[in-house]
Image (cartoon, rainbow, N blue to C red; front, side, top):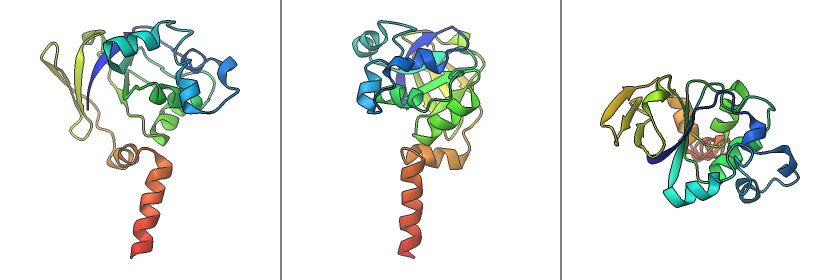
Length: 168
């Protein structure tokens, strides 16, 4: 996966900042995407579209706060393909995997800046910063989680597994 970075150095970016509660009256991903990150950065969508950002790099404990599953849905629907942070709130981590949004734990976020282009190899556990020519080893995502992400989420993964079992 290759993508351009938008970075937020702030720690504890909570689900209320990712998708404010006032927009939880509807569940459609496209609606949620229109309000994604607006309480943290009013220009997030404009910047994302203008500069082609696909990866968020952020401080530790990303996705803390309310356990709303709409937070990763809003990010994915807004066009974010991966989130890189030193740590994630446990429920956000699980919700992201469940919808097929890859998240990477990486401690050295200070080595990555907005506008850097990254190539992330989930299978090998490597981040290449194409912009700076640096390469970092990261903790590999376990293969069963990679399968869920590749299937575009847990529900699709289960459908694939069930259909394969029915074919036998």
